[in-house]
Structure formats: structure tokens, C-alpha cells
Amino acid sequence: MNTSDNHDLIVVGGGIAGIVTATRAAERGLRVAVLEKGETPDYKCNTRWSGGIVHVGYVDPKEPAANIEAGIARNTKGFTDPALADLLVKETGKVIDWLRAQGIRFIRSGTLSYLAWTMAPPRALVAGMDWKGRGPDVMLRTLTDQLIKRGGKLHLGVTAARLIQDNGRVTGVEATDGRRFTGAAVVIADGGFQANIDLIREKIMAHPEAVKQRGAATGMGDGMRMAVEAGASLTGLDTFYGHLLSRDSMTNDRVWPYPELDGMATAGIVVNHAGQRFVNEGLGGVNMANQIARNDDPLCATLILDTPIWEGPGRSARIPANPALERAGGTILRAKTLRELAVLAKLDPDGLEATVAAYNAACASGAFDSLTPPRATDRFKPMPIAQGPFLAIPACAGITYTMGGIRVDSDARALTADGAPVPGLYAAGAATGGIEGGPAIGYIGGLAKSALLGFRAAEHAASAIGEWAKK
Image 1 (cartoon, rainbow, N blue to C red):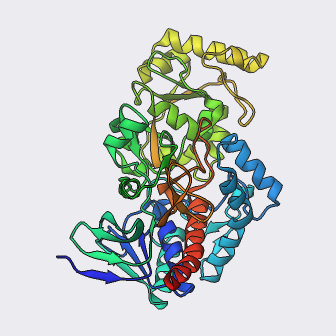
Image 2 (image 1 turned 135 degrees about the horizontal axis):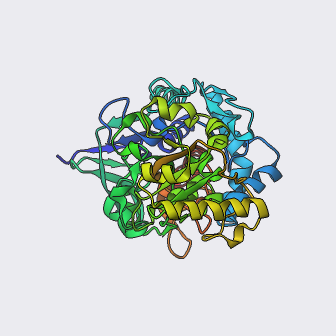
Image 3 (image 1 turned 90 degrees about the vertical axis):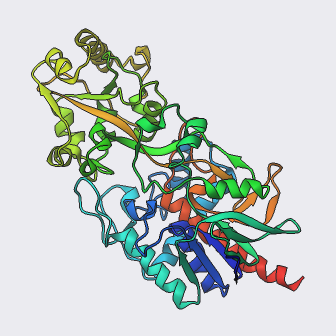
């Protein structure tokens, strides 16, 4: 089969980045086709499985610019490309307004700033999967309806194989079944490479099989590969967005993607089989997930806490581990003494007692730099582990999406190694790099990044395609 389907803009991927791109481009008058490898209207993607919260560095995108700038700086420590950071600050709120104009409803799902824009209806505050009919699922369906009303097309069951180029310009996509979708430009929006075990092993961790796929596990990095073949460059491939999960998530689908164990871990400690700390818990859950995943044994992590942590931070998350994890059948070990707990958790008793003693001494003195490894305290308050019964929760790292990808500018144009745009090629969402990751493993917000870059790609393409057609 080698038929051709001609449009103005071809979008690869049907998550929030691709659907926002396509819907806005169709609104601007372009003939648009979305190629989605999922075969049914409820195709799997990370967007559908997300919490539906649009934030920028855990800050409300409609807060004053200085607050958003501070959130980006706090989370990425200056890693975000300045032009892309400026775009996040100035334009994310406008994209929220556009989404609302398309019929997307938002609610405030909590008192914290970053919960101001949660897609409605929100997911239930329970463990496990709960995405059908929830905000992100409704959002994708609503935008798809808008796309089709404006003449756009969603092609299901189509996997992109390579980009078509004409005199150096990207002009279409060839699918694995031989079909050709041609036009004036292409947007890569097929997500990261988190499900590509070989690439994950090469770029991020030695044992990806010991890390839980916390998302839809559809991102294979195909868009990145095609972009590189067309002359684009990549950036920041060594980090991922994820969370600490119950180790039972490897075999029990009721305990993931929620609840996360991050809040309790940033208050307590994470130890290995020897009962020794091996991560800096004060850097937060996303950072800890990366630290654990890079360990020689990613399945060695056990969260240690006491009753005040279990009753405090254990209940404070949006979907709290206390009681959601226990209700879902997750393993929670309890004992009156640390030595008894170590035996139950198959940890070295002497090692655990020594580790907790040193940690509690640091809590009393504030000398957290003396610990091995040192523990940051600027973002999360450590709590002593002193009041029984004591608890142990076997944990693992969960990967949702990779943070690096195709290098882009503020118009979402894919860039070559020397910073020049690849003619006719754009990228949006988790397929891109330059916003998240870096040495701080900084997280900004997948939905905000994806929707914003998708919107920018549509805006620029709508103008550029018109100009290109005149030549």
C-alpha cells in the first residue's frame, strides 16, 4: 500500500500536545491530520492517565510572573532554556483560557497554588486507575470533537515510520503500512521514550526492567528518531518524571499510578537492604525516583517512618497513602521496635538502628550535611523517626515520561545542532527537551509544557505555511 493523503499540517501523536496542536491549527484554517497509533477512540496515552493539573513548577500559571519565574528557578535551578522559561511564564495562562473557550472545564482541587487548574471532573481520591470519564479523558474527547468539526482528521491505528523531506524541508510522514500523509509541515508529539527499554538502558539507568512503567507505556521515542534523521538535535535525555510507588505495583495494579509515596519519603528516610540511606530524600519525589532507578538494585528501597509521619504526611497528599495504599492491598509492615521492623522487612537490624539513630541526631541538631548521603532541608521538613509503632513500606521507582528530547525554540520549531530550525518540522510535549530535567532533575509540569508547545506550534505553522505557500 502506498497511497497519499494530503493536508497542510501532519501531527504525530494524539495526547494533549498533539490534539491541542491540531485543534488550534484547524481553528486557524489549516487542513490537519493527526496520526495516532492507538486503535480505538479511548487509546492509551499519558494524558488520559494524568491527574489533569495544569501548573508551572507547582505554581498557578495565572499568578504574577515573578511567582512563576520563582517556581521554575526553584525546580530546575536554571536548567530551563531562558526563552522557553519566558514562554511558560507569559503564555501558559493564555492557553488555559483557550482550553476553556473550547469547552474544557476546570476546578480548584485543593488550597495549594498549583491545584487551581484541575481538569473536571477530577479523578476520585482512591488508589489505582481511575481515568475513564475524568478530566483529561473528557478534554481529549472534547478537543477531538472540535478538531473534526473544523475539518480535521484523527487517523487511528497509524504508526509513523519516517519523515518525508523535499529539498531539505519536512513535508510529510510515511506510516509503517506504507501510507503517505503529505503537507507543508509536521509536528512530532508522540511522547517520550520511557517505554523503549533499550534506549532507557542506554540513556538513563542500567536496570529499566526493575522500574515500574507508571504511565501508559506507549512512548517509544519514534518521533525523536525520525526528527534526528531529518536533521534535528536532542537535549537532556538522562532524566525522567516519575514518583515513588509501592513495590507491590510490580504485581498489583490496584496500587498504581496512585498513591505516590513521595510525601512520606521526604519526611522519613529511604534505606537499602543493609538498612542504610542511599538517596537524598530532601530533593523530592521526582529526584528520588531517578536516584533509586539508577541504583545497582532499583528494587532495594524501603521507606521507613513512624506513626506521626504516617498520620501526618501520610494523609496529606491529594490521594493519601494513608489509607489508600492499605485499602488497595499494598504492603505496610509495622512493629513496636526498629529491630523487629528490620526483621519483618528483611533489612539488616544493626544497620537500620544505626541509620535511624544518626538521622534522629541530625533532626535534633540540624546537622543534615553530616549524614551519608547529606540531606537537603530547604523544600521539605524532615521528621524524626521516634514514636512507634514503626512502619516499613517496600518501594520502587515509577517512570511516567522522559524529560529530554528534541531541541525546540519558543515557536516549537525543531532545531539543528547549531540552533537553526529544521524547515517544516515542529515538536511538542514529552518528545521535546530543554524545559525539564538537568542536574536538579527539575519538574515543571507535563500538561502545561505539552499544551503550550502544541499551541505555539499551531500558531507558528498557521502563519508560516501561508507564507511558504506564496513562494
